[in-house]
Length: 251
Ligand code: GEK
Image (cartoon, rainbow, N blue to C red):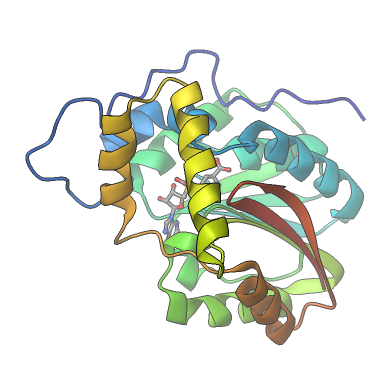
């Protein structure tokens, strides 16, 4: 299997959203300003993002079944959507979903240049409303963490129900650790990663404040329990770097 290009566009605009001092930091939103720089933002903020995209491609090649649907929930600019399209059998249909109009508009434009044989559609929709049916692959690549904690079990249950036997959910999430010393160390290392990629202390701290109300993380144990209760038969941690993880959940 050839390694496919995972970037959604060649030209990426540098993220400077939190570079200047702000008198008050607004709650983070996936608006046009963020969508314009999102590729650069996620690549410099999420350790292993590129590797995760490759892993999504690899897992799709293994688990996507002919004639089924593959979902990318919280598709943003379409990076994971493209990985699915490039690695699924031609008779699959790919459905990307995002509730940010700015993301959906850019995602559709990014997909226009893709000429893989797999059909696709991008829906401007709240994933809590998305009907999952006849699915062999569902991807939640750093999206569930933006949904209210109490609503997560029901979403996972609906995904498990919509997946065929042997189908998979790829769930990537920022997590936290019950042990405070470990939590502090992993947070520090993540901040070091961001500094290594050119973010200033001010940018790191303002972005952190902006995300506080919208990104609520779980522990690995909470994820495992919830996936199991939702009905998944096998749950594997298939990636972890600092406080960023991915689970492969098999139906
Ligand atoms: C990638 N998966 O590049 N319904 C639909 N979309 C939502 C909802 C919701 N309720 N809440 C948030 N989103 C992508 C990266 S980013 C991750 C995903 C990040 C969307 C939101 O608009 C955003 O585009 C995406 O979920 C999360 O592989 O920013 O860390």
